Length: 358
Length: 248
Ligand SMILES: Cc1ncc(C[n+]2csc(CCOP(=O)(O)OP(=O)(O)O)c2C)c(N)n1
Ligand code: SF4
Ligand SMILES: [Mg+2]
View 1 (tube, rainbow over the protein chains, first blue to last red):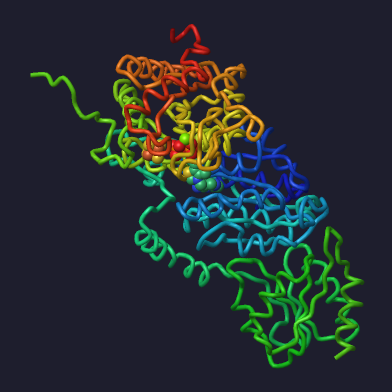
View 2: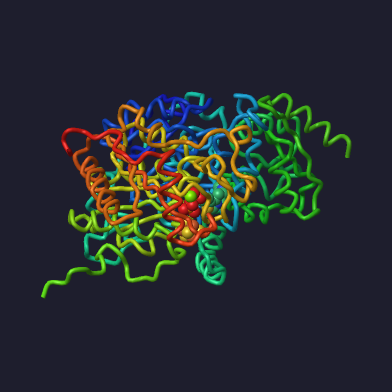
């Protein structure tokens, strides 16, 4: 068994990527993710990789685009306004079907916002801000261990689907320390092997094949329609195969909480207190934000009377939950915003208020 | 019998979509000839810009990708990390490089990225239909400067070679044109040296090619060449700004 190590979230994320065989990282300072570029600037070269402190998030994601197109395994990390700047490229990377893993350490918004943890980038992550028909695959960890595992697996998912994968950690998970078991170290793909494993990559044609051209522009719209229809089934497959969640007492509960990320930990503590007081509570914790775990909502049993969404936004996730329960149960919101946090006491009190009013 | 002139192996046998008298085609061919003569067509990786040459990967017989508008130098920086020994180049217009992409080009030059940038300065936004570029000359008309560019409204045209050559790690900087056979030969020499600088990992290499856009200048091809020689070459002197000893 691998040993447990006490690690800070952001450093654990970076280590996990290196263990997954990632050797290219491009970053730009932004709180609360600075420990990722700082760690990579120290450690990546030692592992034979490359770090660049980019001129901006635009620079960073375009360096990532180049490295991914060339066949490299690439990690990016940033926080809310940084993701906003990267949206053009998330659309582009999807359009040319290139894999990258992007860690989003969410803070309070909108605008420059606050540097405290937030979840108000739910729509930004799941609905995207880039143009056109595409999806970003989005994982949402609730602990450092889970983030480490999601980043590690995220590289394989990105390769399999040839699509950007985002790991949406909030500032809390980035900044705190927890014991983690690191996944085994994988060897990176050697430069000579890239052409065999990724025949679409830019390696130079070596006079042995037609030249590879990675293009995103389509001056004939008929061909673009055909192209979109040809790659779209992978998103249908992702919707079927990647949905992930944790379910606690969903079948039997009267009051069902829905939450993700660090907030779900607060909700679990609140649930313990509510149970002691005789409430029958359950939880759906989203582990993927896109695809949204629809299947989890099929588990809801006949006892359910109320659904309560707990999140650090004005109800962005709640909109998806409302669409899911289709008016069968009243859906309520317990939230804080702007970088303010929920604590178990507040969740318990606000839950009781919701249940009384009924 | 040895043929005197052949289709370059570096160019794919596709009809160019560029307008008559446009110099994009000459620039494409020169880069490909240089790579072919160096035996590097099979290793080279190119980055196409957003602009009329966005589909240059249809013509150049090397691995290529399309960059988002202006970001080619960042994209090339990423490629070069994965293939440090392959010749990598960006091909960028003046809107792409000198407007939306100033941050990327300046920082790539400053980092001393070991790739080559070919900068196609035609003093106009060609692809979008003739709007003012940062390189549009004072008095030159454009669809967004219908009375001609004025200093009061838009400031002075940007001289990119002059700016780039300030950067210590940009070791090869030259401005050329392709408006006469002699100039074409000089331009090819400049490209040869630029790729040699890259191969020897001496630093960043930058070649600006003063180019024509007859369509958006509203001039027939021959007149466009005359206009370039009379107007652009005065403000944008054709010369070598920097060249390391190793490739002289
Ligand atoms: C983000 C973004 N903004 C604007 C455009 C529209 N656009 C396409 S080409 C172009 C200008 C290209 O001009 P230049 O770089 O001078 O190249 P030329 O066509 O003259 O060779 C612009 C603004 C775009 N594609 N993407
Ligand atoms: S619009 Fe101008 S730059 Fe574009 S192809 Fe035509 S002449 Fe060349
Ligand atoms: Mg132009």
